[in-house]
Image: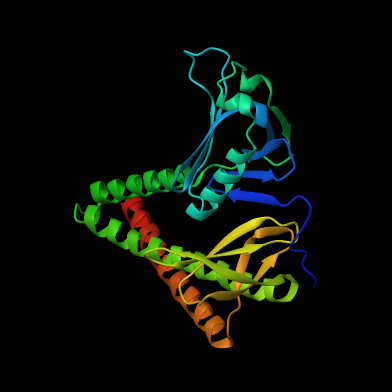
Length: 273
């Protein structure tokens, strides 16, 4: 497939844990996607843009100097992507924003439902799972043996580690298999290195800039990305790599099922009396 690398109006896309921000060169607004809604924030409504490592904050202007401004934030994004997005957006802000013109930014934004219901955040799901497991542990410890108050959490941590391994490697294997057939292949360039991995940058067909983390590549890395979701990409994997990912996914799944099975069995015995 042919990839256009110099479109007239490239988009920058910043994806975080609960929100996605888009900003295009030549456009007069930031498109914000969060909780099933698309919010368009005109540049005139933005008073400041802050880059805080992996967090981007877009601060709206206020009509009253003593009122706290509204803040739109993207968390857990790539630090390099946050820096690039912040730099591009600051360069396009009108001079009136820098001069502190008293305009209420919240009155200028428009929100359009995109038809997709909001989903609970990862943090809420994690807290809910911990709460359920804690109730189970206490119930088993009270109805059976107090020692289970220590033993069951260890078993559940083992299960969570296996589940995380199965999900991570399983998702990676799925992407490697599916994107190799229907994805668009590009050569990503090394952008920078962290203490744990290397960060590569690549552009999609519309010129949007994306980042991919990998610890084994060199100055370039062959990637295949999903044309319908360019932020989803996978490095090209050898047959050996795919086989190892599949095996470790099965091991992780076994750990998760075993830990949950022990937890469920002990709860059943405790309730049975």
